Image (cartoon, one colour):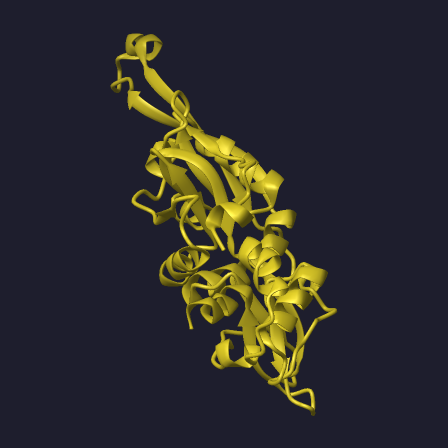
Length: 278
């Protein structure tokens, strides 16, 4: 199967020259954590801008300074295994599809899981690709702290446990993006000011007004935002069946439970891509 058979051809992207505010608005409206960035005049791919990069650089307004460049890309004619390999190696959930330097489409983990793995007959247990060691968060944790845990653990989703250690939900970055507000703030930078006793210089004082747009996390708890109705699998659930469940319920990860409903690991959609490389 070729990349062009399952890639999305209609792509939303940001442009340079551009601003942080424009990227923030686009990310929020799409409910995604990363988007391609192209040159406004030629549509040549520049790179990707991510929600993580925006959080890490709250004072940078120029989009060109926030773009991750040198990202892996694929061609429309590449085999699907090539895309899966790039995604697993880079950890990125989406790859730009490029031909002659121009952005032609995008292929995501979701595309591969929904349009390929779910349609195949892969009997290997999905639990072979599960993550037995995962970062988790208590349901009473403030949402802002959960965002920091995600950043420190370098994950997009966290299992949620109660005070007894039982699995009670999952929270991911898309849940947080939906609740985040775009806040606009301004500050004054005084370049040249008056000297003491020199009141005449006040009229020639130079000031720069800097406006910043950023996503702010509301004062809420994880339990207020998490998904509580979990779709789980067992250690025997096949890769294709797991992919079908992810497609049906529009989810990106599913907990693996024992017969006694004990949480033993997490299978993410990106983990399932490993089945294409074996």
